[in-house]
Image (cartoon, rainbow, N blue to C red; front, side, top):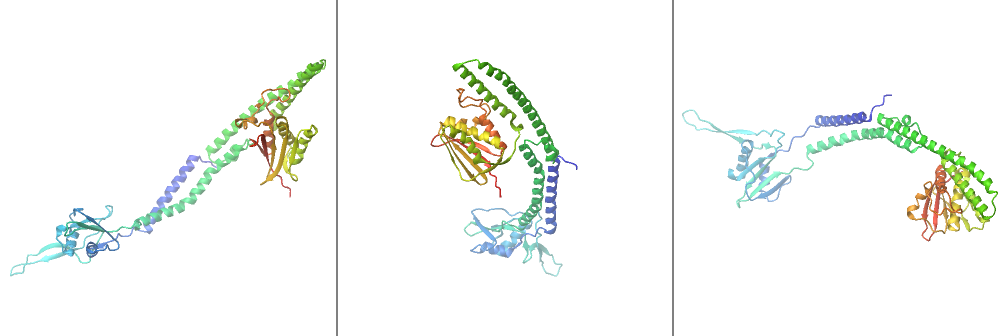
Amino acid sequence: MIRRSLRLQIALFAVLGIAVCFGVSFGVAVLFPTPEPRRIGIEETTQALRAKQVPPGWRRSVATRRPFVTEPGRDSLIRSALAADLAAPRDTVEVRSLASTGRPAAPVAIAVVSEGLASGRPTLTLSRPGVQPGARFSPFAAAWRRPDGSWRIAEPATPFFTPARLRMLAALALAAALILPVALWGAARLTAPFRRLEAAAADDARLDSAAWVAGPSEARSAASAMDAMRQRLLDHLRTRTAMMAAIAHDLRTPLTGLRLRVEGLTGEAKAEAVADIARMERMIAQLLTYVRGEEVPWMSEPVDLVDVIEDALGRHRLAGAPVALETTGEHLVMADREHLDRALSNLVDNAVVYGGGVKIAVRADNGVTICTIDDDGPGIAPDELERVFEPFHRLETSRNRNTGGAGLGLAIVASILRRAGGEIDLQNRPGGGLRAEVRLPALWIG
């Protein structure tokens, strides 16, 4: 199938729209010709000028001086007829045509009035043009000077929705009715590849966006460029991951040697050396867990979140730490139990170490399982609530052997929850302490 460029498709739709508009306009012009304009007679104009009340279909105004001057030709003939019908001198009446310049004025109905002198010799006939009785003309305005010197002006009122305007509105409405469905279809057709491109950009695992997006050449080119960029990023991440994993793995060998050497030490020096080595091993284990990221096997299965939390709290109950769990029934989620246990244990450990104790509540809300983990510690500065999830970012800067780490704990927690389709949010409690809110899709088994 030939794929046209986006520019060509837009141009074709524009030409189609213009063709439809011209076709509709031509059809309306042929099927509904412009009606003849309103025509008025001398008698009704006289009535409009003389009446105390303005007759329907007319509008009237008053001027203190001559409002306009009659042009020679048709207007002059109408002026003479109107002055005769008003029984007023000709110079007290003025007429101005209101006919559009785009249409010829209506012809004047001419009557020839003959005057002859009868005698024994041939009759000499004098003719002057006049207006036939009952003749009607295209619209004009008439002005009549009153005895008080003011000029009364009368002209036919023109409604806003004239036949010509109604004809134009009908053409516009018909064109819109024909073009709108085509426009909606065309818009959906043109934007569909870019909606697929958006979906492909949100799918980090997709590397065949160009074939899936299809559509015009511009969309396919953008998808190909996105695939190439994503492949470069993946290659870079794999290289970095492999390098960091190799370094972390190789560090274990000298640590093993150090552990053997400290066996010869005694007293406090040995205890400190063993604690330092254990801390380094924990940091290396965290680093390996983080850099492997998505490559770590993930076995999704129904997991009772309450059961996982009970396991995490059990270790602290044995140590005498103040812990509490508030929930009812089981709350199933779809996740890897081992990884989920690692994430929740990390959050519980932080709450016990930094907050002195932990209170956990689990509930379901609109298909989401929500787990809140509260502590009574000092909380976190507002500008640090988001940064704590960045790799190697630490809030506790002393790095002593009791609390020191690599700053990867919360980054690993966030990564695990994302793989389970969930999220985590930290917020300071109004009464003091920190709240970690974990949200996971609830699993319903009917």
